[in-house]
Length: 236
Image (cartoon, rainbow, N blue to C red; front, side, top):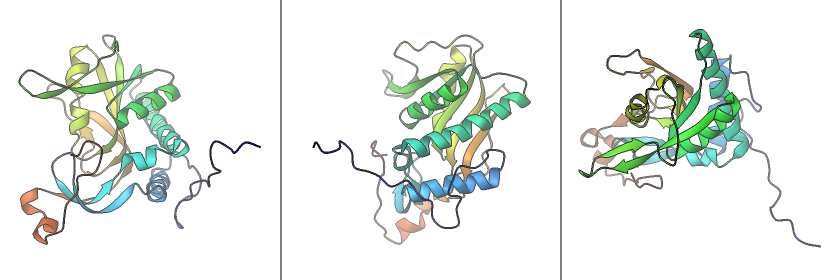
C-alpha cells in the first residue's frame, strides 16, 4: 500500500479565550479577536527586535506568511475583508469593479478577495527606473478600465506606504480607488489614505493593533544593545 502524499494535519486552534470558529463580520470586536487568535495560533505574531520594511524598528513583528500559508485561515480573513468592503461600498451606493494589491502578500489577497467579490484580482510589482527610484507598476497584461472602482488590499499596514505606492498607476489609468483593506494595521490612528485633491480613501482592517515602532535613533532596543533582525524574504 502506498504512503499518503501528505500527512494528516490537526486543524488550527486559537489560544484559550479567543473564538474557536469564524464569527460575523458585523461584530468588529469579536471578529478582531478571532483574527488575533489566528495570528497567534499560526505563529504570525512574533516578539524580538525587528527592522521593519518602513525602516522603523519594533519589538513585535507580524509575519504575514505564517498566516497566509494556511489556506483556511487566509480564506477566512479574506472573507471578513470582503464583507467589510461590500458594506463600505453599499454605504457609498457603489460597486467594486476590481481588486488590486502589491507584491507579494497582496497577490494572494487580491485574488481571493476578488474571487469572493466576483471580480478580477491583479497586482502591482516594484520596478526600478533609470534613476534607480522604485515605483509600482501593473504589468503582465493587466488591464485597468477607466473609471474602474478599485478595492486596494495589502497584508500588514505600518505607514501605508505600500498602498500609497499603488495610487499613481491606478490614478494614471483613470481608476477610482474606493477603499483599502488590510489583514492587520499596526497604526490605530491611520484610518484613511489621503490623496491630494481627492476624497480620503477609507481604510478597513481585520485587526488593528497598537504596536509601537521607533526611529533607529530613538529605539530603546538599540539603546539596550539588543541584536536586530530584518524579517521577511526581502531582508528589509
